[in-house]
Length: 571
Image 1 (cartoon, rainbow, N blue to C red):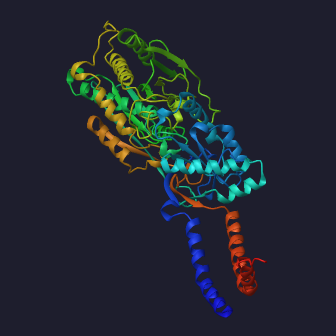
Image 2 (cartoon, rainbow, N blue to C red):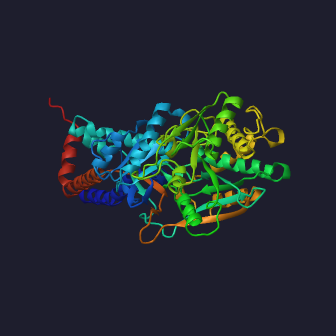
């Protein structure tokens, strides 16, 4: 009987041990569908400008996630939400040699208080100025990503438990996430071309006519290129320039209103990178050709920058215009139109000398000033240092990163004010071109009315189109849809539309762009290494107990019989 029981038990163990192990592993391991989450991430800027490096110099990520509140961040992917982000926490991650930093942005920016949006806008230049080898990414939150963040936060908070046993138990049972990017290491993009566009309306009445140049840069800038939509800076300036091209092309199409001024329109590329497109355009026209409108009789250059908001309008100058000059005439006409037609608008002139010691120029008109061309920049911003000019928060509407809804915080475009500013500029230019003040025409006369009026719906369509996709210079090659559409739009209203390409010098490049700016990140659910250790100990203990039970079955069987045998009553 003993041998039969032993044989039965041994056969049972042969099948029960593997089955129990399989069942145990299935229970402790997460399902495959829940084990990973894939989402897009957008890397911080990486570029070189005039020999200086900026931004994050690394793109590869394969490390475990932690929140910024964890005590140990070394070689960890530090996750932080925008509402909790600060420069001190960012520096903490860099000091501890974090494996990466992922900043989670809300889909709906209207949930963010104004002070948080403003604080982040002010921090963006600081983030770029601090060169780092740590990969820095931005991600748009969704339910799964927030769930990952919450679980990571719980896991990170266990690091501060009072008991070592609690830490060990919590670490062994908590869910962790391994963050892995799918792309390769970033590398410099060779032979990248920045495209600029020009077109003209030729004046009537002679060969040596004065020329007015209207300029706007069309690229955007922010801490992450793929999130840089640049609605106000400088989608608004581009929209105003295109609307001015439409309005004056109609005036120039009639002999009675065909003025004696050449109008030269220029959409510059690389504006956010020290105005590289404008610099090369000036070199091509002033140094490398014998015939150019810029060489002859330039009345003034008017640069348009951030015009989509505010009840203020500032004319930024490097040198105050002399009375009697065309530049002074424009200043006078802007003051006249603002005072008589739009009393709600406060107009002023801001004087700032060009500082060649700075790494970058303050405004685009300074590029022309260096070449001794009279130039201004018109903007609703009083200072070139305004964070609104270089922020991913500068969207068509800040209520959503998808661009829908009413704006509630941060820089945005107010179509009513954009339309008003466009009308002010158009009226002032027309008064200069037709010399209306000298002819005694009052400042309350409006030229652009009825069929010639500024079309607000046209401006709205332009801004919506410009902000439908990011316009960072690194994303716009010479064949991009934005460049092609801008060229087509100019060709509808202007003559001699042409492209100008800028490529960095191969031996001593003024700018260098890098790839891998958008990647796919996978978050894999994993258990910590101590979990594997404890699991191995449990399995070894389990098998050890079964082995001892089989080897000493006789003793165990006898012990169980004595314990379970009925007791005999003694009389």
